Length: 147
Image 1 (tube, rainbow, N blue to C red):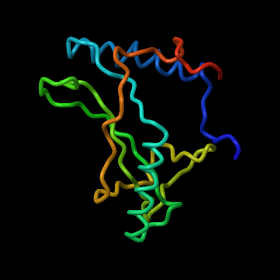
Image 2 (image 1 turned 90 degrees about the horizontal axis):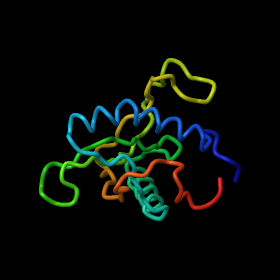
Image 3 (image 1 turned 135 degrees about the vertical axis):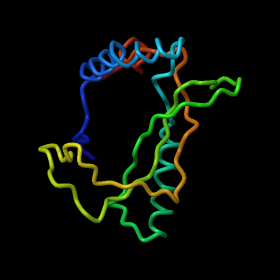
Image 4 (image 1 turned 90 degrees about the vertical axis):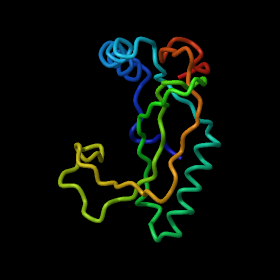
């Protein structure tokens, strides 16, 4: 198995997070009055189990595996006085390729903002992963040793 095509370097990841912190991160902290979660974790086993589950359910619905994908949504837990009270989260939703393809396609296979996937609403989204608390900056140690 070769390297996936859409990988980025560690430096690119650091730059993306730094820019997010300087722009959206400050705005969110200012509006909420507290530091929010910004990193989320799922075990490879949890992700693989979910991918296998989506493939199985989608196949029963007549979808082709090659047309499936996952969309990542941002969410926020409502105030409930538990450890997640008001913190951000992400959830993954299964998608399938639309019957009408997007109008244009970039060099890397992206669709230049044209979304060629639609959600499969009758397959449950995945949530309840872990979050880094307090948030850690990407690249600040604890990276598992090695690039």
